[in-house]
Length: 293
Image (cartoon, rainbow, N blue to C red; front, side, top):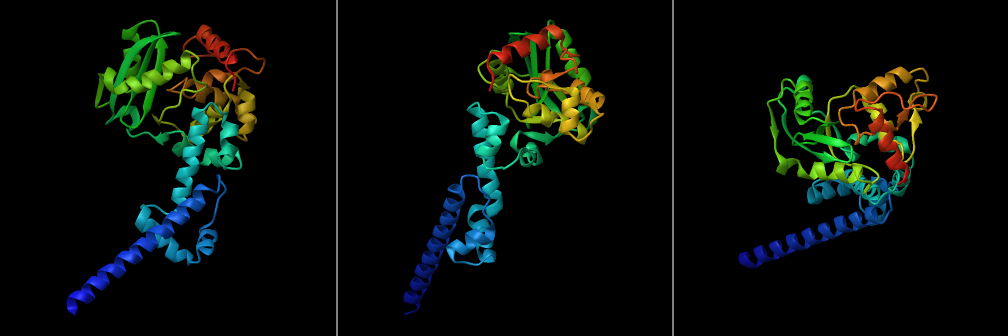
């Protein structure tokens, strides 16, 4: 009798577990089918005829994340996929259900890979891998930590490029040429320079002030084939007289190309400054004009 009762208890628990998993699957399906529209926990729970508290606890136990985190992840995936397919930032924003570009900017670190730098000032503690290769604009140095791209540079001399990298990170734990570990990042940048993609999308691991990040987010939002003046960027940030500060943020961008500071121009439409020379800036803009979004 005791054995039968034990078997019945096990069976009952299994049935409960199956029902709970089925409930969570239905919740996931609702989120997946919402096409980017934000469903509240209460709306999902009401549709499934359970309490919001019960659904939250059960969903997190089965999925490991909350319904909101799951929804954010799905929208993030949709956003990134549309960018990969060549959609503009604006198109991908609305296509993923964010409603406005400000919602994308609020999540730019997560969506576009702009994470707080994983190393201290001067690169202290950073383990950096790099490679130098040929590109349509001369020799290209690409460097990254385990978390993302941390430095890009163009030039004509390999030794000078490597010295620039070491100067940027004087306290790095290690700076090592490693073609294998950096190969994917190099390929993405080369594809962009060869006109195969409208953006060079890579996770970034960069040091920046809050203002620099805001400027860089605005640069990322400029569609391929278009430009903005420093004043226009400053206006969009709510600092109408901040064009010089915008210019400094562009000049201190350590991962130009991925953060496209070449799309920022002077008020008269002139090219303005560019750390790798006016010829390269003009070539980048001319190349992008042939492949607008």
